[in-house]
Image (cartoon, rainbow, N blue to C red; front, side, top):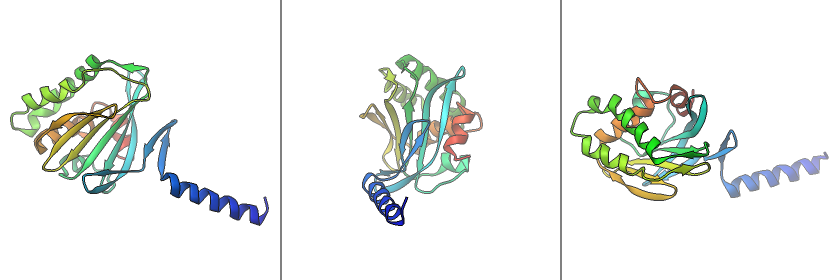
Length: 189
């Protein structure tokens, strides 16, 4: 390729990158490199894989105001943050989502005090339909507002309280996470 060709290719490449923005492709699935949560610009911290019986179910992306590999900080930080779950399995039934959340909260809820049962039940009720390959679930936390669940682009509701948020985030980032592989990936390890 001539010098002129290289210059034209480089200019075209950077103009397309500027036009389309940046993204991360993880095993053929695209994750935005940034999300605006409330008034805060958050960056993609990392992407991990959730498997069940050796089958890839979804990929999870963690978004934070600043990157970190500290799982305890991810749980405790009272800042805008999100986990985006992109389903790669053919279909995850509503019942499977609910069972997974209930199992996860059994391991984490006591550690964060307060009466979380009603809020956990409400959160679990948001998962009332299957999510199929190519669809996503977003769990978005905004301080002084709460944790919003968005399934297939539709808001299911907001659960108030940083105590609830910490119990939920401990499912992914706690000492006994739902998936060590997912945790490590989202922490950028």
